[in-house]
Amino acid sequence: QVQLVESGGGLVQAGGSLRLSCAASGSIIGINIKGWYRQAPGKQRELVAEFTSGGSTDYASSVKGRFTISRDNAKNTVYLQMNSLKPEDTAVYYCAAGTVNSGPRQYAYWGQGTQVTVSS
Image (cartoon, rainbow, N blue to C red; front, side):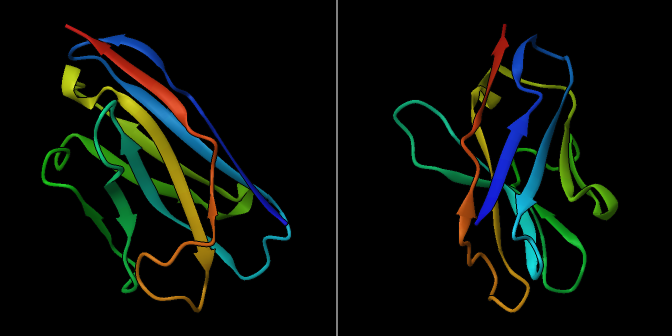
């Protein structure tokens, strides 16, 4: 089994920053943490940032230039640095993982989520 544990969420004022972490453990051979999603109350889950098959990164237009996804392979951890936060960034943030051979946005595992609340 694979466990994904997110951390780093919290309450921050607009304009502030947070860094989310997603740590993978368990049977993680052949597993990659692929990206971050978020879900705001009453809305569908949406992609925030991801590692693409070409090894680069991609972002939702709403966060481009403000958020950065990165990874530390030695720690089996992926990060989401969030700067210039806005109230509309308020959501539960989830990381997602899949096998290294799976296609784009094919996920086998999800974390439990971490709440991010941005006050105006």
